[in-house]
Length: 199
Length: 249
Image (cartoon, rainbow over all chains, first blue to last red; front, side, top):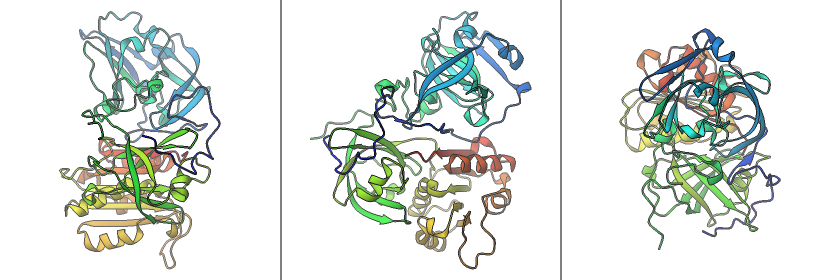
């Protein structure tokens, strides 16, 4: 549109190669949630995968944390414009959780304690692209950041990395989750700046 | 001619600064003229995009302060001293100059006139902005839904919209406002400075049995504290809508 703001730009932060368009770097870890932070006792925690035929696989906390975990260092990008580079997590790969699940579905809905949902194509959860994380920076994941465990899908905007995760439903058709139904993009690729519907 | 926007697609629009008001020493309201603005709901936000002369760009999100009934798009921007965008918007942008914005965005942290239950608004600092849009929308519609605002500020001078809130408490039936001062109170205030606590929300909010819709907006630590108190007082977490900001802009 060609609107130039004279006098703007003098306070810009240094240019960072790892930043997608429209993002700025933060060293904090801002919090974005639609409601209060739920506190989930570990003895009431479980994670359930439900296939398109209704078959279920479930893990309680002891079973879940006994699975092979991975330490990953990733960049994360929030749709509210902040990015955090080189964040370190420990979690269970979705490849591990989905290894024994028999499905022909192409889409998933991620579910959380408190009712939050977000949709993610199944292929975006496979091949070492997604984890259920339970440690951040070497410490147990704090409730306000999604503890006991959250989804970690760093190649999509961070609202896809649902906090307080408790399940995954496999679906034949794509459906919008919570923020997607409120106008956010169905897929959310930060490198294509897919923030809102139609981007 | 502008191209027709695809339905549901948020295109960048030129906005012209037509008026300004200082709400406190560090918060400036920008009244923007945005041709063909589709309207907005109270609580929604917009994205602002600035382009420097050498092509460098930055984007930020700001809550809308005005109700659409006023047919204006107003932002109240709190200057963050080490920020990149907010000091430009508060101190450099001149009347008649333009910026780009798109929106409105957000369908969750909004109040709709059709909601039947009482409303509790809890604001920390500049978190009052989207809540003010709700109060203005209610006033413009002469809606009678009981509204209570609990507004935490550091000092009396930090309160935005203080005169308008006083006027609306007088003129808008069913609106109550309670200030909480965390560092310095007005002269003659009956209590020392304090942070928002269980007693504040218990005394000046609604009982949980009234099943109010609660909107909490402010810095992350404030929102975490206020939302936790509401849950502890028995409010249904599903009726507590939150919006947090980190103060990094």
